[in-house]
Length: 381
Image (cartoon, rainbow, N blue to C red):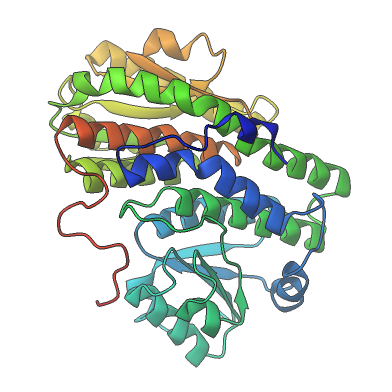
């Protein structure tokens, strides 16, 4: 599926599991995409059964916690944009106590790396008690959630030893994208030609990631010492990229013990701007899909804000398309993201943010594999 895979030395020794798992993402994504999009069209198993149960439902609830909830936020926009199905993303711990009258007979999708997360398992069981149709996306096909949900869509990330989620997160995005694509075809919100083009671009993602990883690591390792004494970070993204801003901020918190928050870019001037200074850098996602007018408009607004913040004295680290000539002029450092569609860019953008969290942890003398007070799976509320 991916020629670039052969370029990765199999005997590479990594100092931490987190870094190894970051580098395993091209293989994990390739395997997951092959599982859920074997010929680039569909519907394929297990989507045939899923579409039979969920294809005509008019609402979907996604319940998840932590990184999985951020994947759900991205999945919300994928499903709404591609298939036209309204989606509500809930904190799993809150869904358990929500009113049964808020939505009429929605489908419920739970996301969990372990498939054992206490809050999310409780949410699944709450949905089952309401006799709702359920889907579980987990990284363990034999987990409790996978067994109890009506449909299980396991990722193919493989064992993830480091506590911070990396390859389990990007493979969740891949499963959600495949789900959205198959749902769009079933509901006829996307014609076959467009669906085939989207499937082709999805299959290109692992190779794009494989080629970019070494460049990102080298650039971020040089950048980390300049950021190590920062007091806090604001991660900013618009649309689907807000979910990636949230995930990037979480990675920095849990890996490097540094204060960070993710915001929609347009919210910066509604309060958070008071924090902006050289000691509180902005991490701004400024990628663009030139074939998408809405994406181009969002990009123009991000670029304008970037220029204003630079004039205000902000320190800005930006993520922008390869070949972008404007963003580097308005930022202190720019990480280049291979060009792809607006929704698929999420699978690429999050990886340099994972590397930034990893490098900051190492620079601060922290073992990123085992952050204090955290466990891989929260199995008790």
